Image (cartoon, rainbow, N blue to C red; front, side, top):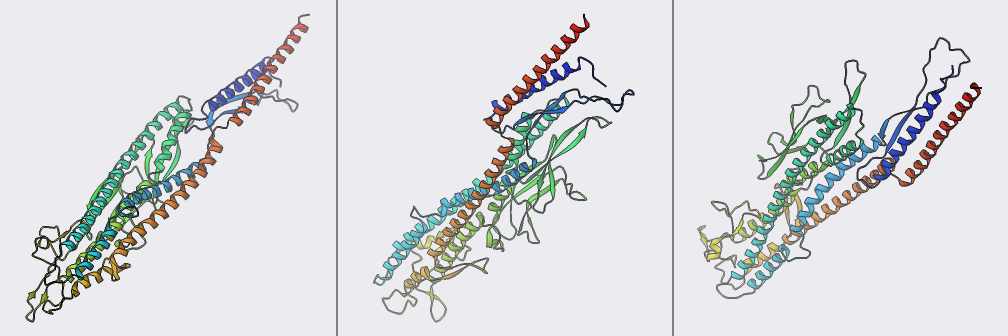
Length: 542
């Protein structure tokens, strides 16, 4: 069965139209070669076949199609690379959050370029040596007291700065939660606009680019999975559009829905409470979500992402393993071995408590050495008394001492308490043997125990502070190396994405020549058909 005489003109016209549209798409790609987030587009074409089933069809009938049909414009993307990229974004977000906090802590403990706690310990030892070598019935301990006060002031300074760092990290975390909620709201708005465009027959590819950028950004906060489901527009299920869903992936692999088309969940944080078994803060993050398809029955619509669990409330749980939220929550809530588990993160709490442990041990040791001697009847005699008390109301000379609450005893400042120079005040000797014990206490090795049982360092006070400094440096270097590795992998995936989705001027230049030649060939077909028809008309007109 042959086609109508003028059908060839329709084929030629369709070919010219398709080539022209392909040139338009190529021009669109070239014009956006440097547009951030732009995805290369292509023209979708299919062969427009002729109908079959005519009763006059025989085995010798030749079927010829009706040319080309343009079905739309689409993006060139690799969904697998999108998944990899978003997974790696969560890894980068987690490591970056940790590295940022550790960098803040470095400004507190790193004394490479400044004189602070380590030098104050050395100065105190020097002043005690001077006092030990002094002679006379009554020693002037004001120089030692001044050195002690300088050291205590440095303790306070570090405690204040640590508190400021915690407050700043908490505020940044609150802002991150708001930003994540705003991101989800924007994605939902794009979902509505894109769906409306699809219903009207427009691909909305540029809007999809913007939505994909937002999804990539959301993946840096929490691990996510992006799904598309079919939504039918009529009862006959002949017309449908894609609807986007976003899930948060928990550490155990289960999912909770963050976004369902134009509906979104909401992160809520922080809820700061006191841990029942420890005098420290805990930052909680919760989520109002839209469902959990992996659970039957589904979990409540509001769930904890981080929480205090266990019978005593001292077990800390985090239900995500990736993203900025996980990294920040680990640094805010984890205290390493002070949590009773040496495998947990050395977060802010570790360095706060490690520093407090040094201060408490220092104050307790020196107070004990300065206890008054007793006579035969057990009555206190001679010099002595607590050198340090807490700033609590009422103050305590037995602690526990922290870098924030340690205070030089007012009675020492007023002269009611003095350094105990001799172990036996009635010995009659001029040797200041108890001052030598103070010096030895600064230099003797001792166990520094977390929770009164786990030894985290053995050495003197100076070296213990150096160990805190070194531990922070090691943690920071390890985190920075991990971050660099994640960024390297991320850049590799991004490069692979660009190879697939990015615009190459060389490729687009080849496409320009290809579609130009295609357009020229289609025009030549049109001219040839016109000449053929003209010849036929001339013959028929004779």
